[in-house]
Image (cartoon, rainbow, N blue to C red; front, side, top):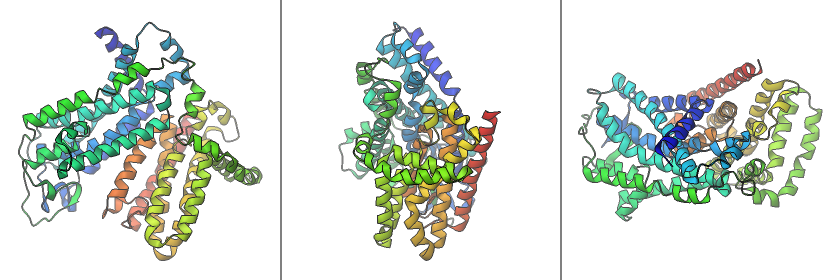
Length: 519
């Protein structure tokens, strides 16, 4: 394995990733998120607040605050954006050519990892450049690129290395190529967040901080040397304008903290060892395109047990055949989703029973569970035809490409409404604004699921952003624009209208793109 070979293959990986539409969508999402998190202090909120006083938007403060928020986002979404290249090789048939080549496992795995890492670093670079613009518009003091570079490298590079390593491992071992690998990484991500909290409270071995690839514990340790972290808030926090602003020092990282992050980066390479040993090399007896797609569901065994439940949708399919035009197609699409995942029928029954029978105090929990399951379920809705090789067949039916997008969006929205219908019904009487916000949030999420799936032709773009957004929605309180589906009752009529407009905009964009593709 020569450096030249690794460079050529890694550069080709980056080119292939940059040519995908999902890259453009991800970059736009990165710019929007980085712009939104650095709020104008005139709104009464700031990126960092210490003892109810805002922290001045100096280079060190914006670098630390934005890197902390970026670590939360990219440590999860980065994995879903980085993986998937093996599936593309299987679908295109090039996998057999790669497996029969003289390149060794180490060369193929190393090039895939470097390509994924370079792709994530480019996205992080776009995030940092957007933060530069925010600093020039809203910052206090001069822009100091080296301060940003130090914080971003120490905090975000080990995180990106670990996400890329896990993505390569899941693509190299066939049992983890599907949603089993997706959910396993989500569990690992949650565990990393708990490590940071445990280290901060002093209830864990300090060496455990090396496994915190997000860098949260290292960032809190660096801030602890300059401020009371128990009184520090990061992320659009309210502050008291009467209090004097606080200024952080220019250089936040000590030599010990830098060494710790470097060791964490080396530890992030460990998943590559089993990836080299377990790499299937596209061998037909170990992984197949069709078989890999079926393995993508972590509920495959449960779906097999519940297969008789699929018969429950047969009357609805007969009804769909009688309904004319788009309504019949939407109903048929929704029935197809339920029939292909019988566990969704059981979950739908549980949500209906829980929403009707449980006390009002637990309805937010029912809503959270229903939305979480629905989001994972509908992430495949707009990519199923392409994944199964039926895209051309679907384009040949009346309405073609444009009608397909509409029925997939309508099916996702119909299923989401069914999952949360009892909660909406009960809130429509007691809390009509909250019920309206929940419905508007479903419209927005369904629009994003359909649009992102159509642009990227993979469910991972929406799934990664959805899981991160769900985590933020469940934990954020007191902010209407983060209460997308009314989990906490903080949503207002204004925020509900904003999400409804966002969902309709996503719908219009999807219709426009489908017409462009058809033409």
